[in-house]
Amino acid sequence: MTLTNHERELYPTVLVDVALFSVEHNDLQVLLVRRLQEPQAHRWALPGGILKPDVDESLEASARRVLRKKVSVDISHLEEVCTFSGPNRDPRGWSISVLFYALLPRDHIGAVIKDKVEQIDWADPNKPGHRMAFDHDVQLAAALSALRQQVEGHALPLHLMPAHFTLTDLQRTCEAILGHPLDKGVFRRRIKGSPDLVPIDKSVGGAHRPAQLYRSCEGFVFAA
Amino acid sequence: MTLTNHERELYPTVLVDVALFSVEHNDLQVLLVRRLQEPQAHRWALPGGILKPDVDESLEASARRVLRKKVSVDISHLEEVCTFSGPNRDPRGWSISVLFYALLPRDHIGAVIKDKVEQIDWADPNKPGHRMAFDHDVQLAAALSALRQQVEGHALPLHLMPAHFTLTDLQRTCEAILGHPLDKGVFRRRIKGSPDLVPIDKSVGGAHRPAQLYRSCEGFVFAA
DNA sequence: AGAATAGTGTCTGTCAGACAGTATCGC
DNA sequence: GCGATACTGTCTGACAGACACTATTCT
Image 1 (tube, each protein chain N blue to C red):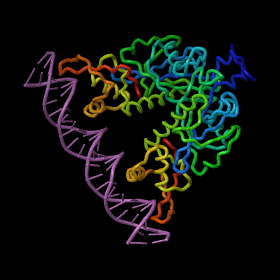
Image 2 (cartoon, each protein chain N blue to C red):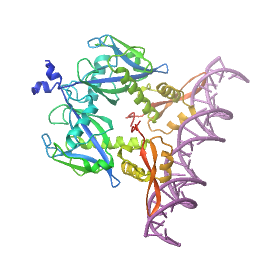
Image 3 (tube, each protein chain N blue to C red):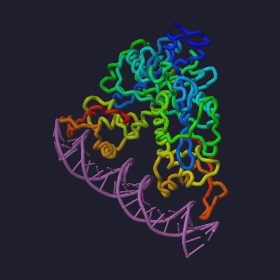
Image 4 (cartoon, rainbow over the protein chains, first blue to last red):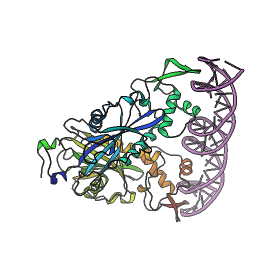
């Protein structure tokens, strides 16, 4: 089923896009996909797709479905950033993109599988290196800014952490997100006594004092 | 032109809603309209309407047009809050509402004219007193929260102020938004030296020391 | 003088930033 | 002991909260 041009003019295309962030080797990365189909085929873009009212329960559910389909990941937490809209941002006509960002755990980062896309890449969100489709460069900047704002506002990016981690691991992850180093004392003072962090009965060492391991608490929600 | 039911299922209705705030007698108010047409005729709601891709340049422009048409006001500043979506929130089927909030200057508050709506009311956003259409009670709460967050984060609600105002006027307005009193010394210390405030060569008095009058600077933007 | 509001000064507690110091491992 | 990393303690400056104090007008 397709609409006529006249009908197209009355109903905008509704899209969802997701900036999926993760951290590897203390570097913040964002998942980009190379588009398989027109428009903008072979251009790099944030994973996204068209809302399907017949299967999606909400915009967020739609974004979750798109991630499942295109990069085969199930994401627990999606945060809405903002919308992008207008007649000229997509060659198909008047369109709306609702942008989300999501956090993929470090130990799942390698498990992402490309599916229905030409290629995938984990890029540096500060300078992606690829020329991006549509207005996705602006979207990426907005998503990165929203993520940083949350972390600056004391939200812990525990969704990015593996099952067990040390406070130093967590600090490195925050630093990767923010793009600048943090003071150890300040960082530990701030998160000390957070109910989201649960010490576990183990420690990990090397040629140095062993570090306390933590896990995130049950039912933790980012940006709560 | 209308779509068949099948087509309806593939294209969601895209709506914009606006929580238009103002302050009168140091009370925060939000503009509600009583709906003229089905669905939810005669129920109170935030002013809103359907996106028209053939005339709107963006979602924000659409919200501006809706305010012009329904309550005859031209709004300079619109801030996006978030989206609401799903198959059951509107009886017409799968829908998306993009929520904005806006600030209407105190000295324009009486100039709002109802048009294409049954009735208008300036309600207390904390407890509107009317049973609201759709999920507009949730939307109103979200918009109020977004507005408060901005003001708590040092943004000055200068768009709510008349052309000339005193610092005490401004403080009263902030208090009305936040819902609790502020300390005079703290408030003045914080906004002292703000480039957004321009003292004007006048003062206003009564049976007391006259107060310095201010205006907002040219090109001021809220939440910059 | 007194009432009323404008505007300033100051004390205190909290917290971020900076950084030094102590603790505990392997070698 | 030494290197390395974990973890803690402390000094300082900025700032919010609380509140007292001064300033200027009208009556």
